[in-house]
Length: 163
Image 1 (cartoon, rainbow, N blue to C red):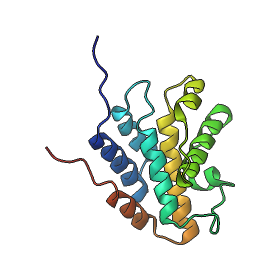
Image 2 (image 1 turned 120 degrees about the vertical axis):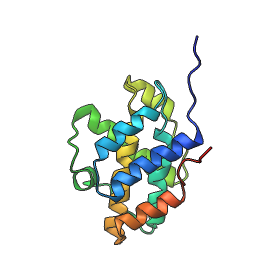
Image 3 (image 1 turned 90 degrees about the vertical axis):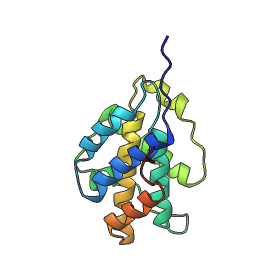
Image 4 (image 1 turned 45 degrees about the vertical axis):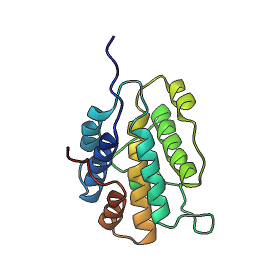
């Protein structure tokens, strides 16, 4: 039986670079996620955890805290206008958004139990969209240039290492 390839730190850096590249340039988010799909091992939450932490880092860079909150009301409609979610898809995205916010607050979210219940292998894509929404919201609500925020986030995740 063939062993499954484990995601590497380079895979994580590549996933972040692809997603942030699209956000920074106002590019095609779905196209970036299609490229990220190649890094996603079947039946694995990767790179969902990476995108969840990326969203948490964006919230941190925006100074989001109990004293300086950022509302999630209307988040998807305002900051993911290219997406139309209903039913289960909307619930999955909401979970990814709240899991990222919880991560920012220091809560270790138990992903496996929740996403196994979904019966699909797509948590990583919702986490990616959640990271996009939070980054756009932080930039807009805090008056930060989105490209600058993306560059700060990318600096925390330098590109894949050359061999």
